[in-house]
Length: 163
Image 1 (spheres, rainbow, N blue to C red):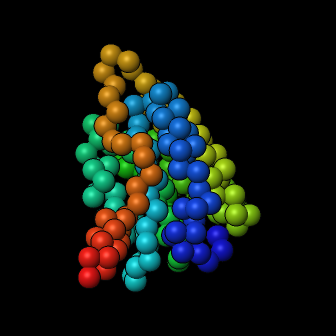
Image 2 (cartoon, rainbow, N blue to C red):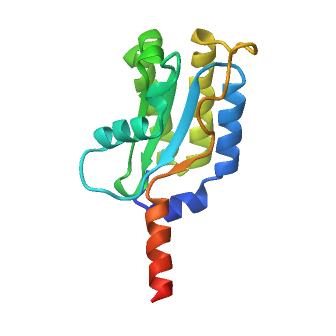
């Protein structure tokens, strides 16, 4: 992924298509998939992704089968996190494969297509291990792309306009 600010990445991402890919994948599984785009921060990426995982309520799914794509465009880094239920079923090699494929697509600036492909692949594995049951399944988490720091920036802009 080339260096870019979050705003630039968001201009290149089709968040509607990503949300639709999440919804399509989740129609086949009781698992939950989220995408989070972070603003710049100092510190290590993985702990920040784990914090976002908790903040977004992903640890509270019934079957511990949620997956987070945490992207920090300004740092040219991302993390794919799976909760303990899905991790126990697929193992580390699966996450390594997903990360390598997504990294390759990001290097080609295929951000939306890369995320959709990865969402589809993790969705297939979630469906194999946690199939959809229309009698018991509920959408436990929102499907929209999470934009960390969005509110803070909007508040700062509004304060500047008020001055």
